[in-house]
Length: 438
Image 1: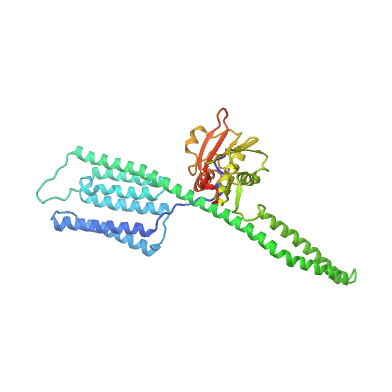
Image 2: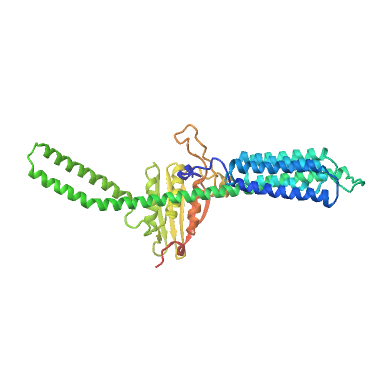
């Protein structure tokens, strides 16, 4: 069974730009303010000697960089991943310069080296996060070797054991590794879910627009039918009053011919909404399954139905999400079936169950537990095929179907049928969640 579908052709963002430049600029202003206060407090509040001019120059460079960014790009600009990574790298270098002037890793503020890593892990793709993490580890290593003395009381010598400094270095490197790996992973999964949900909403919106278009076309065909019949009738009466073979007779024949052509076009428009009536009216389960399976019956695979249950056949309130979700799963089954797709339905007083099974190779066992996650697929991208411009194997099909059906109250389970490696999807609802109020 497929783990992608026509929904997979929905485009992904070409680049992830999650925040405005204003956010990075604001964080940098906070850093500038905190660094300025700290340096001035150490120099004048505590009276510790330190290279004040050099420190203020580094802080001023950060402030000037902020002003340049705002004036050049504007606060509302959304930087690319590379541009944001370069800004964070600048912040790392500026902070490392301050630490080098004020004791290196012996400075308690060396813990702030973790801050740029945390920011990059939250907003940047993983490759840039790991680049920032490597840069941080390299700068921490350099600071453990080369730095000016830690500002302290004049005339007193403050010494740190080398093992203590190595311990600080190990702690920072471990913190960098943890933040870059864990935070980046969590943020990456959150971005995936956000993108996939956006694709789900887009697919649902498209389906709603198509349903509305069908209804509009049918209404237009109905309204235009009466004046068109009047035109045809008047033209036929004119044909009886004109001389055969005259130029006027030819014009009348042309009017009658084009009126007949318009009637044929209107008939096609009426058939767009072939389900008839209210597209969201209540419908029996058997009719609902036949409707969603009908578009896939011409794909060379036999679709077999089997419905049994106790009590009356369930009558559901049709919805775009329900139709799209079921249709998506049936489409997936026909994609990977060898010859047959079996749709079984069962019901009792409390629950309704639909089981979709194909006779294909089945789900890969190692992926069954993860089915329904976004961007999970075994279908390769075909760079040479006619759909090379599409996403090919994004793995959004089952995610979208699962999301839409769960919104109707369904619970989905994916497995391979016992005794055969055939993919099977089981969908279960409570009847009270699906049937219209009586």
